[in-house]
Length: 341
Image (cartoon, rainbow, N blue to C red; front, top):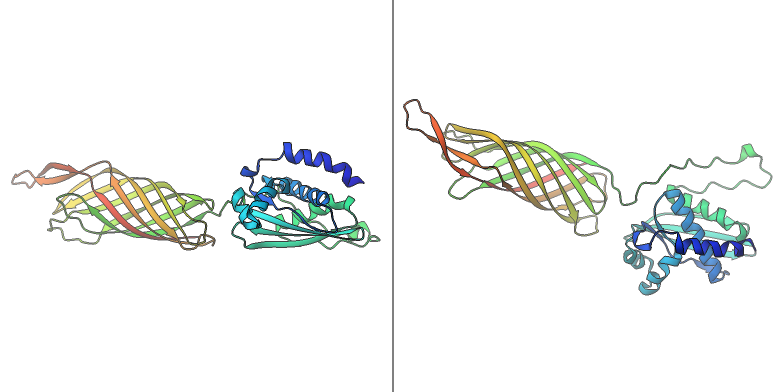
């Protein structure tokens, strides 16, 4: 009877107080029940969704919200994709006599199993506590402690695991700090340049859908012939940008852009020109280990200098002085490879 008294306010709370399904991070699929009515399964699902949302501190779509997507797609994974969640839970409840056994499995949005656990309640009236135990186990990905026998003393009761104040957003990924190296090919109309090699610190922060990138490093020309007409560029730069992933797999393409201010030196013959410069860039790349703590990636980048370089030309004097010639704005094509962890 206690369950019946809880049903109406629980359903009202799920309809009017819960976060909209489209903003949910986790979805609870309709409960599969044995020897239970549809209403009892719905109540169990709502109890579990409320407990998960409270303990994990994330928005959760209850079975009342996921049912339509599940009925349309006929599979939990497809329903989770339709709802736009990062993880989803399947529940199965079996009643034998008064005892109800409740099992749950937590899945990633690609269908990979993350954790499973099982608990039991002496009766339907105790399901709220059972769903709280199960949600905690799936959030922490820890087994449910064995319940003590009724005659156990307080000292014999196993201590529950410490609950964090808030569970991190499942979308969030660890920061990756590492290095990046590349081959730079400067180009500008009517001029020839030495290829360049670069090495830099590279940091990436974000989640599974996008990342912000920051770094600093330098680039040096591969040629050192001071009497050649080839222009040699030396650069020391910082960069700040961002990219978005184009697919959901562990190996994923991304596109993005950013800005890279720095100090650049142009050298031709024995004449040099030094100054603060800035480039804007666009890039397309591939991350080979998106779901791993260590990130391995490669990218193609096009950078455009927006502050010009000046040709240094002889002024014709016996002292060998120089004067400023034409202004040019190099474009740099780059092939880069990096690793972070």
